[in-house]
Length: 396
Image: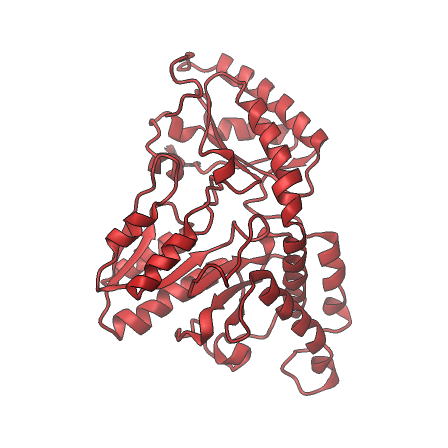
């Protein structure tokens, strides 16, 4: 059996989405900016896709949704655009983010620091969540932007985005959220949550890879990252990926339609998997079930390196992931586990299991069986593991 439980990394394209995209590869393949029929015949599908994106985010007509290649591009665009508009050519010099952001935000902030930008990396609490009060305390009169993810890619923990947005509005500071892990799992309603910029990627909600978007509130000024044409109202140059946009629009429509299914069926499977794994001695899951996206588990199994567990799972046909990585002879620990203050040995044991609406009870039962066998095998050959009852399920 093959089981895919790495949906926070990428998702399968929904067959309905693929069917919607297919004609725009070989039949209606014209450049939408061309004046001839080959170009103009793509316009109705593009309009439908954009309407689906606006409806899915509950964005206003006067807001901009710009097509990008992915959320990495969108995140880079916001951070570098803010640098150009408000720091390099303005009187600000400060950006606030968190220590558990996606590398697309973290690495860009590190780059901006080399240009003289002051960046505050806010710490998370023991649950792996940033507290809104910490954002408010960090804002100064030099703060140009606050960038906080909607949901964490490792833990699935939901951040207090609405509270943070209200603080930023009160303080007159621009607010950006990377919503990659939220769309399709929880409601993202931009009429209720007042953000200035929001990033997303189609491949995280059963759309195609290579296409994403950046929401920009009410034509908020933002210097372009890519120059060379007048595409997307002059904001983002490059020939439109028609098939990708059509697919992303359809995927967004389905993501909204399946929200109740995520909250019920997917969450039920996730909770069942989690409850069964926590029966294993010396295991710990970051965050409570209700504080997370309904599909995600970040579990630590004491005494077992994450990579060793992945090896056993992969041999059994199960795809999962871990935030740690082997580089040469150095083992890097999961950054989120470090951020929440996990003991050094636990920071290497994190295993992320992320479900989707395509997973079945049979697959989850098989996964539970395989993990239990892997734990027994790996602990039997461990030279360091010994059972610690005082730690078991009691937290870090």
